[in-house]
Length: 626
Image (cartoon, rainbow, N blue to C red; front, side):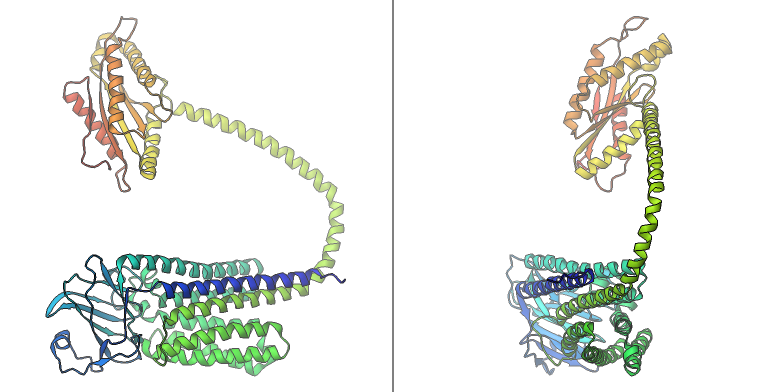
C-alpha cells in the first residue's frame, strides 16, 4: 500500500481543520438562531400599529395626539419596516394594561435611527417623553444600551404610545415590550453571543496579522484588513461601535456604515485579485476587479462628503453587482481546474445570499421574522472562515513548491553542521559552566540584597520594624483590604510623658524604656500578619489585618494594661510608664484616600492624650468603609 507523502498529509490536515472550523461556525449560527428565536420579548408590537408618513416634515406632537382627522394607516405585517424614505414616520400604539408588579421597558430594536422621540400618554396627560437618536451623543440616552430603550411609566389604565422617527437610512422600528427581568436575561445572552462572534473575528484578524509579520505574505495583511473592516461594519449595525468606540463622534456614527462597508469590499476585491491570480488567467476579468475596487474606493471618499442616504443606495447596488461578478469569476476559474476557486465561490455565495436578503429587507421588499443583521453576521462569519481556509490552502501550496529545494539545501546544511558539532558541544559546555558560575554569583548577590533590605527595614534601637517598613506594609495592607473586602485596623501608641523620663533619667535610660515597651507590644502580637513598627521617637504603629474595631480595642487594652502593670527595670531603678493609643478600623473602599485610615488613628491618639492619657480611644464613624 502506497504511503502518503508529508505534503499530502499536511493538505489533508488543512482540509480537516477547515471542516472543523465550518462545523464550529455552523454550531455558532444555530446558537444565534436559537437565542434569537427562544429569547422573545414579553410583547412584540407590529401588526395593527397605526402609522403616518409625513413627507413634508411639518406635523407636531400636539397635532398628532389631538387631531382625529389625520389619515392614519394600519400596519399589516409584524415588522415595522418602511424601506428608505425621505419622510418622518409617526407611530401610534395603544399599549395594553401592564402588570404593575413588574418594571417594563420599550425597546426599539434597530440601532441606526437619526432622530427618535417617544411620548407616553395616559389619556390627554403626558406621563413621560424622550428624545434620542444618532444625531445626539450616546451619553444622552436614558438607558445605556446598544439599541434604544425607554422605561414605561406606571399607570393604572392603558397607555397611548406615540413615536416620531426620521432617518437617512432604512426606516424601520421593530418595537418590543420587555419585562425588566426577561430583558436582563436576553441582554446577557445577546452580549455573550456578540462577544463570541466578534472575539472569533478579532482572533482571525490578529492571527493573520501575525502570519503576515512572520511570513511577509501580503495576502495575510489584506485578509486582516478585510476582517477588521467587516467587524467594524457589523459593530456599527448592532450599535456596539457607537456605545463603546466612538460615543461622542456623531459625524462618524452617521457615516460609519457606508465608510466601513466600502473599505470592507475594497479589501475583499483586492484579496480576490491577488489570491486567485486573476490577471494570469484573464486580463479582462482582472480589469473588472480593478473597476470594482475603484468604485468602492470612490464610494469611500465620496462618503466623507455626500449624504448617507445617497451613498448607502449606491453601495447596495454596487455590492450586489460586484458580489455576483466575484462569484461568477470564481466559478469560471473552478471550471478551469483551479480547486480553491470552488471553495472561494462557495464563500462569496454565502455572503451574496445573506447580503441579498439584508438588502431586500432594508429596501422593504421582504419581511423577516428576525433581524437581517443576524443573517448577515452568520453569512459573514462563514464567508470569513472559508476565505481563511482558501488563504491557508493557497499559502500552503506556495510553500510546497519550495520544499524540495529546501530539502536539498537541508541535506547540505546537515553535513556542514556535523563538522561543527564537536566545536558546538565544547562551546555549550563552556557556556553552561560560565552560566553556573553566574547563577551562583547572582544567588549570593540576591542573598546580600535581602540581608541589606532586612537591615534597612529594622529599627536599630528596638530591633522591631521601622517607619520605612511601615509605610510600605501599610499601603500593601490597604490594597489587600480593598481587594478582599476585609477589615483593617491601624493603631498608634505613644508613651505618656516620655519627655520627662528623658529629662530626669537621661536619653540612655529613655532608650531602655523604649526597647522595653517595644518588647511588651511585640509579645502581645500572636498572628504572623500583625506588625508593630517604631513610628518615631516614643511612638509606635500597629497594623492588624483582618481585625475589626472590637478586636483591635481588646488587643490594645491588653497592651496598655501590661505596660501600666510592668515597671521598666533600668540601672536607675524601676520606672513606671503608661501609654495612650488611638485606633481606626475599616474595610477600605475603592475610592478611599490611602492616608485617611492612618490619619483617623492619629486623631484618635490625640483624643486619648487630651482625655488624660493612659487610655485607648478609637475613631467612630457611620460606615465601616473609608
